[in-house]
Image (cartoon, rainbow, N blue to C red; front, side, top):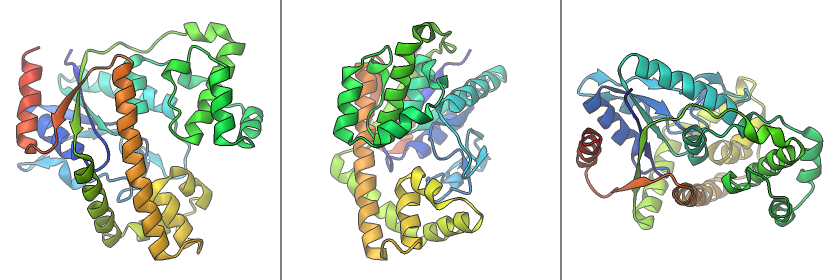
Length: 307
């Protein structure tokens, strides 16, 4: 079977364009690893950039984009199931699956086969945890170790609460830790590394471009279509702050400033998680993001051919 090629990087690093070029060279298909691009109608804010999926007049197929309605519940466990089906389909047709995205937790989960994502939600526990401060949550997480502790992503409050929920369940049901793992894949991971200042510049430029392209209108259209405001806020970043602006909670200048800061912080957290993936045994071939995309694509193709 063709191995998985994973191309990851922080937001605004150019990973989609690079992945498409690699797919064009190898006869591949893209599998998105983005936790928000699964939603229909969330296009500008999630950076789907579907116009980039064409090279020299040839359309590059993509998977796990626009598969559920905005406002629907979608989680890591569902992503794992959809991912495994997509890989089997692509490999079964003799094509190369190229995973592209910035949601490190999703990438790590499908490569390491975490079985813990199917653990059910505990509403009572969540109610208790929501009353705690971030510091209290982290203390509780560290004081109650479980088989999930070393795997957990605690970069946001939401994920920290989920990590405690999973750990609590595993400690109460230790047999779950021996659950059957997902398929093991042959893979190579490539990461795009950019100087921090260039990354920040690209984020700022892209934010203002997307605002001009109608990102506020996109969020307003979702609200008008019946997607609950609190659900859009839950999706974070662009959808959170623009919703707050449309609801009259923020003025335009404040919204833009808060959103820009939040995206910079998000990119930093992405890089932190990628480094954690490396510490946990997922080797990443880092590429110089200052080099032309065509050169990077050639390097990836050459490395794959040398396997």
